[in-house]
Length: 135
Image (cartoon, rainbow, N blue to C red; front, side, top):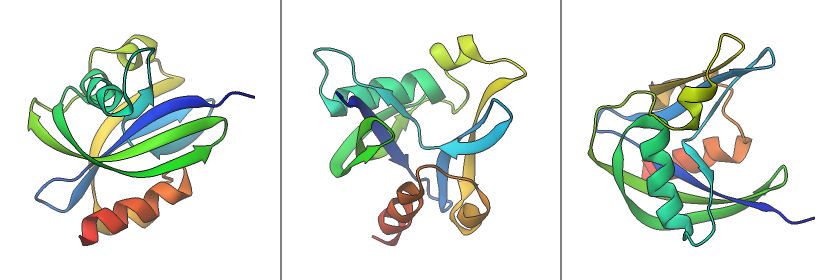
């Protein structure tokens, strides 16, 4: 089986908050870090920049790759990113097109102190956010 390559962004602000995509899909509520599939010809870092813009309307710069994680058929590349410009909102990408009452996306700044109360998937993402915030 070939793993699907994905790029994932860890975005923190100066108010000790992390940007998460809150999701409801098939009756399940959970959160993810912004990110998505790497397209042919893209590097993981380029995909990370594109996905953040598509999902949450922010232009970011990408720092070092922090982790490569195999997760449910995906090979995920995690990057620390920094916001350069934009107003955070649901972007104009596929998420906005697919959004419905049964399948919705809501980008939110979540205080790091509230991270335990959020169903962030995969679980390793929670640990990684904490590690990045501690640096």
